[in-house]
Every structure is written in structure tokens, then in C-alpha cells.
Image 1 (cartoon, rainbow, N blue to C red):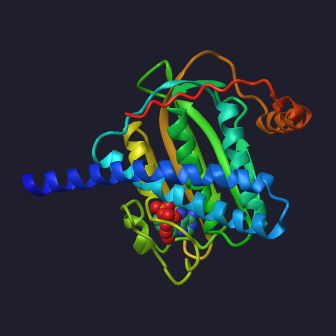
Image 2: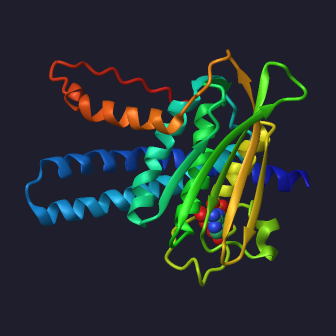
Image 3: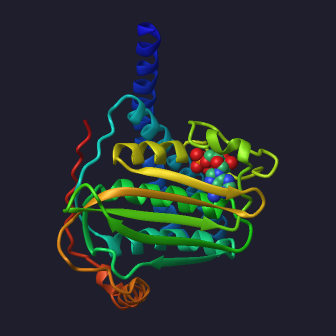
Amino acid sequence: RDNAQKASLSKSRFLANMSHEIRTPVNAIVGLNELIIRETDNEDIRNYANDVQLASNSLLSIINDILDISRIESGRMEIVDMQYNVGVMIDETCKLMMSRAKAKQLELSIICENTVPKYLIGDEVRIRQVLINLMTNAIKYTKQGTVVLRIKWKEDDECDDMIRLLMSVEDTGIGIAKEYHDLLFNSYERFDDEKNKGIEGTGLGLAITMQIMKMMQGSINVESEYGKGSVFSVEFPQGIVDDSQVGNLSEYMKSVKREETKDKDMLLAPEGKILVVDDAD
Ligand code: ADP
């Protein structure tokens, strides 16, 4: 048993190191390819470079998933709690998802209770990752209809300076047959190959999401009807800072969009100096 555990740990460490090493050259490819896209006037070359970009991004997301699951399995992933702005976090995450939803002509709506605290203490990076995993799946496995993200909160019975944040992602997609529900959160597990044909994935997203929830003392739940759609919900504790509330989130999201277009020229920085910091261990 000890030998098997040691072998499994070495496997996870090997995968973590390998994916870390692969990420560096892939990032170089993405960066240099970006320069080709910007600098070429030749449409054929731009099209080839766009394909390189798509393929490299999908490779990066696979590598990132393998890196995360192996870090989790070898006990090297940590939850880092810091103060963050809930509205900004949701706005930025959903904007990442909007173009994907649009490309499939899906409606993406965000329903957030006005009273959700504006500032929370938690691991924002991991919460974004959970949201991205659930929303990417909802979009990937839905051919038509809507994807709805709901954000609510409730008091934490055990602790005065904590709340429980509830986020759910509902889709009108292909759904998941009952017999697979218990297997959903296993690593590298994918189902219904016939229906999922052509949909990219590693079967790691939900395993990672489940582990992140465990590390945050939270939980994940799925309700799904085959052929009709699914609802994935997560619930986890977060620290509170003060009484301020997010308010009307959709108004806020619209205002950010307006500001972005207004400030487009602000990105020009010909005299700018860049500091690059690498904290690689
Ligand atoms: P991946 O999407 O990379 O295959 P996940 O771990 O995120 O891996 O999901 C595992 C499997 O669960 C998917 O392959 C798919 O069969 C099923 N699944 C996940 N989310 C949904 C969803 N919203 N609707 C239908 N099936 C889903």
C-alpha cells in the first residue's frame, strides 16, 4: 500500500512538473503568434495564425487542468484568501464567457441578489475558476436555449463574520443520465460519447471544481434531466468586510462596458516601462 501511494504521488509530481515545463514554450508560441496576427497584412497568414491561436489556447487549457489536478493530488494546491470585489469578479468572469455563448447563439443571463455583500474575503482566483468551469460546461453541452448564472447568499449559522455564497449555473442542454451522476466528479471521466462527439474536454473540470470546493469547506450539487438540461450549484463560506452591497449588478456591468469603450485610447503607452516578475519555484 505504501509503495502504491508513493508511486501515485510521484505520478502526480511528474505530471505537475511536466505541465509546468510545457506551459512555458506554449506561452512563447501564443505570444509570438500574437505578433504575427498583429503585423501581417496577408489574409492567408492571418487565418493560419488564428488557427494556431485557437489550437494553442486549447492546449494551454488542457495543460492547466492537468497541472491543477496533479497539484491537488500531490497536496500542493493552496487556498489563498484575500479581499475582493464580488461585482468586479462576476463582471469580468461573465464577459469572458459572453463571446462563447454568442458564438453558439445562446442567451447568457446573470441574476444576482442586490444584497450580496460587495466585498468578500476568499480565494477569488479559485472562485473564478469554478465559475469558468461550470459556465464553460453549460455552454459546451448546450445546443440551444439559455445559460443562467444565479448568485445568492445566506447567513452562516456557525460564524458571525462569514456568509455562505451560493452560485448556480443552469442550462437547457443535453443533460446527464442518472446513472452517470455519481461518476461526474471523477478525474478524466466523460460520458455519452455519441452526443459529446466533437466537444473538446479532458474530463478534469468537474473533478477540479469538486476538489476546490472541498478545500474551501464548500459543496457542489447537480440536478440534471437527460435531454432537458442541468443545474450545477456550489455553496461555500466567505468572510465579510463591511455592510456594502453589490446592488444592481446588471446596471454595473453595463456601466463598465461604457467606460471600456470610452477609455480605449488610454491603452496607448509609448513611453511605458514594463516590469516583469517571475515567481517560478
Ligand atoms: P470535460 O467537459 O472536460 O469533459 P468535466 O469534468 O467538466 O470535463 O465534465 C465531465 C463530463 O460531465 C463531461 O464530459 C460531460 O459528459 C458531463 N457534463 C458536465 N457538465 C455538463 C453539462 N452542463 N451538461 C451536460 N453534461 C455535462
